[in-house]
View 1 (cartoon, rainbow, N blue to C red):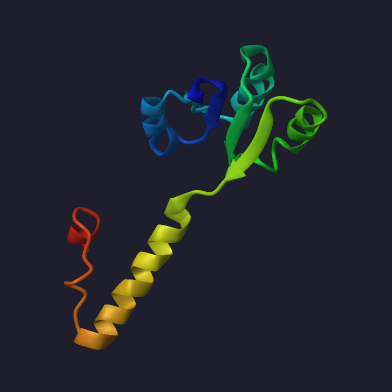
View 2: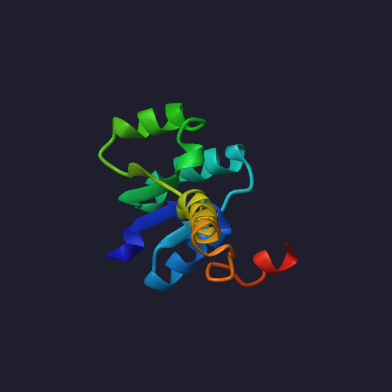
Length: 113
């Protein structure tokens, strides 16, 4: 079932989906993403998840594919855009409540501060 699905996005975000048998494409440029998206029809892909940053640049291609039965192209959001601001908000709240951010420090990134 998953072999008829594809994901186009950043490698660190979509690579783990390969374990589920989903075809993963990690284009470096918008032009590569365009070529990949247009090639999906020939590969028998029924459903393609496209990273939100590629939705606007590939609007014409998505509209052209929308006139066909397959593949259906659906955008997806990047969890990292929400996680980082939430982490900062939690840090600010911890500092206000306790005077320290030691309860919400993340390994690696926060150790350099």
